[in-house]
Amino acid sequence: MILGISTTLFTQIHVAISLIGIATGFIVAFGLIAGNPLPKLTALFLTTTILTSVTGFFYPFHGFTPGIVVGILSLVILLFTLIARYGKHLAGGWRRTYVITAVIALYFNFFVLIVQSFMKVPSLHALAPTGSEPPFKIAQAVTLVVFAVLTVLADKKFRPAATSA
Image 1: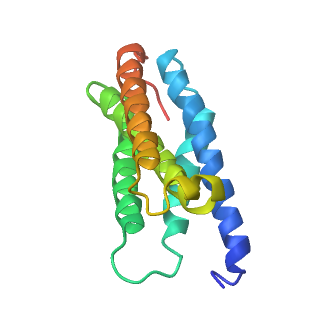
Image 2 (image 1 turned 90 degrees about the horizontal axis):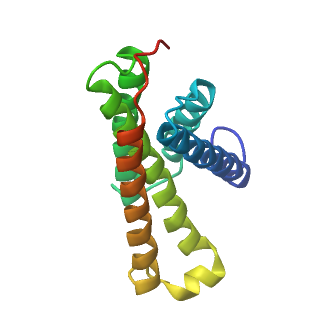
């Protein structure tokens, strides 16, 4: 049991929140490339991405795991994203900080999706049972390149006037 509900239900909620964060994150990233800040979807993306990291900490764990590291890094990145977007209203260098940290937060969420997919989806797990095989490494490398391109495009294209929360 986690927070008074079954681990299975908690996991379903955690995964649903994560998938909403990923889906809205891609919409927000492409909105940045289009020069559109999409304030309501941005709020949903940031909220669900924060909730994804926070709910991940409720799982029982032993020791300092890679998942904990990603969760902590994600929350630190998201803190800067929130400050840039809502505290500094994208003024000056905070626009770039927002773009970069928002896309990194989406990358971390997607990175975990890939890791979990290779662990839980039988056909993917068969290709990379330890997570060190070429199919897993290729998937992660392609993802990193795609997100690097997304970040550069969003940084070049997203040039709104300073906005308010």
